[in-house]
Image (tube, rainbow, N blue to C red):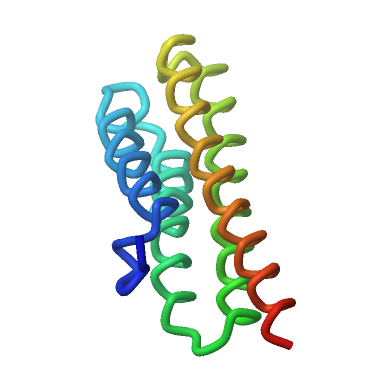
Length: 125
């Protein structure tokens, strides 16, 4: 499928699903009371989506890759925050595993897209 809009990017689609799941999880009573962690994890999940979208309009593959790397880093930040959430019993072990796996899928899709763009750039130079 040809990518014509950032919404066509699989990593962005998966990040949107993740962000919705993170927002649902942070609405739980204990989690929502931890304003710092709630803010950190929701911002990081939104950052995954936004960096993909922002990078899409960057004008070059090299610049796009830079934003995709930021997006991957935000996914790693979400993963780290999930440990804090489960360690403090804001989410169950099952919720942790589900959210962690979903975040890992985002990272993998973004990583695959980075590889694709690097390969594409190598062939055009």
